[in-house]
Image (cartoon, rainbow, N blue to C red; front, top):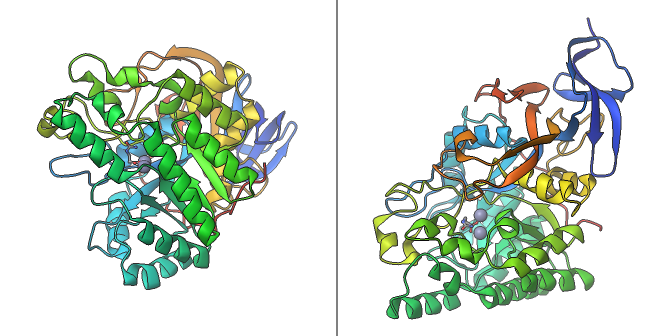
Length: 469
Ligand code: URP
Ligand code: ZN
Ligand code: ZN
């Protein structure tokens, strides 16, 4: 019997700490050897002139999430995980949204039913706590942490989702006791409501007024408040989808003070600006997401956050809606006001190529930072044991990249369920060409070869309180 099922030969391996030329030997879905001139396998794949990276982990995606009356997300678990695989990802972490009045267990059972047998790659759920009742706080959350649901998101904005400060403190306290990690969407709901109503009274209802309804102080204030509330409880938090310097600097200051505050940013805050929401007619709706894209100075601040380790993860916040669709961005009510345009943009397939091309190829970040920001840190922070790196004993989750392949992002070549990409036309150098999950190809030389039965659900270990930088 050969020693290995598969050898990936002659590639350049990159991890969060180093790059080197070596072969990878895989058996039973795991990496069992890394060395020179390995032989003895059922199959040898030649990766000459290619990079071999840990499969990407996208720890912030929304799939099949209820999004209001008449609105339907553009991706289900099959299409989202297929698109993610083509984008070089081997694991995604979608949200499981608790509806008001619903138990967390009931919400989880709905999402597991949607995902079961439909995932091309591995997945693990974060919870969204929207209704922190006594039983949710006292019984469900602690029991679910013990079952491997070790992180959850809370919102400081959105009708029906926003928690008040008392509720925030209550969930932070439970997280501290359980050792869970809380992700926080930091925007001030009352300020947004006030500004939205004022804009609407003045007839300012076009898509780009979405940005005016949630300017930087709205995010800065909530970020500062979230950090302060977490400090009161002494619990780690992750501020997600940071869009600008003031929020980034608030996180940096908290970290300098020794608080366990981590940060995340996303491609939209590097590549889009508010000018995109000003495109003619209704087209601005394609770019409506929260927090909104800002300006070039904010993009620069987000790059600094990535370069200097203020942000430890780079995620897509994939939240796809079709554009030419009354169940999507062109929902009839959205024409009466930006307030009703579904928030969110697609990005699960383009996250890694954008950061590789704009970050590594353009010299803004190193290849090691790229791997850390897109895979290794996600696994470490969220407790995905055996994922996110290339090392003996780890799952053989590998993305094979052609670092010299140059072509633009084109909607026609993507695999998600949306009918547009907000990143259309951006020239990318460096694309993943193959994706392996636990030793089996899902995408091979640009073609889907895996099945939607391939992805597994991953329970998680205790999250990290902070990354040492
Ligand atoms: O606009 C966004 N980001 N939609 C997704 C939901 C969220 O807040 O992450
Ligand atoms: Zn959010
Ligand atoms: Zn999100």
